[in-house]
Image 1 (cartoon, rainbow, N blue to C red):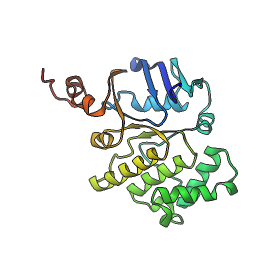
Image 2 (spheres, one colour):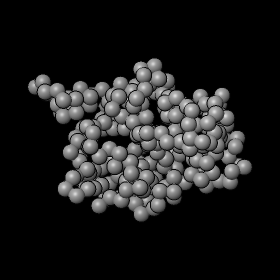
Image 3 (cartoon, one colour):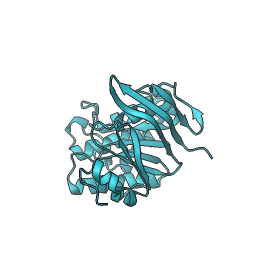
Image 4 (cartoon, one colour):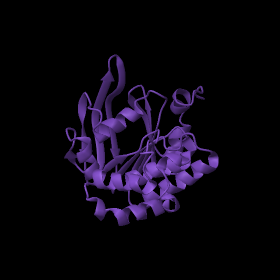
Length: 242
């Protein structure tokens, strides 16, 4: 069986800056993959390439074995690839429910009337049902992040790309978000999660990859990878103990 999502020999430069050089990355169906790496390592660019907002200089993006490298972002979304962003930007003047309806209707390609029930289910799943009629612009940071996830889930994704969703949260809030992501994953959604808060990844993902200098320098069992000398030296800023 082909991987659910594959990035094959992906290369991308911005001027003299190399953010990806022949990267191969795969996500299996039902898998949760974590990605770590220093700021500027190209992690978010890989998400852009996967979702179609950034074009690779070379390489291919495959979804369920089909080449989607040239598909527009909206086509990829309707196939089942959805992503969150580092900084939630809901439609602040609209209600929480209206935000999710917009995502379901336009991202999922359905008429508004047909998505209401599903949107209510998504809000309940994300712990926002009691805030459905509240203006999105009045939400706390944790609830804005929950709404970001709700909007993504409303598109009925097969693959969920999470970009630093735990950033800025307290320890208690981070734990609540980890629980939500785990529940989403257990519900059958495959996940790739970029995150600087490593313990959140270790509590969630099946596999961990480390991106540095435009290349994947390590990947595998999360606890094994995080303890490797190369990762400690390059990512953690600590000298390798050899």
